[in-house]
Length: 105
Image (tube, helix red, strand yellow):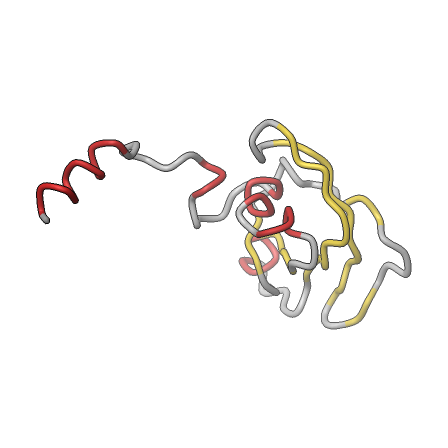
């Protein structure tokens, strides 16, 4: 049994690619971990939490992921301090510039 486990572990890479890691990453890497490209997910910028801004997130409505989930486009509705700000879906900005995580800040 141990021999089989070691053989399988030998086939796996020593570090996971960024799109499979559970740590904060760019928006597209975070969304590519979820089924359906992250549609329906709540995501927030890590810096919002660091600044003490609570109950803020984007509700993702549409995605176009490319390059194995490292780049793309994403649209959603912004909720700021628990209230919906955007009436219609809009493109999520800062997707490559900041670190993102799932859930609400």
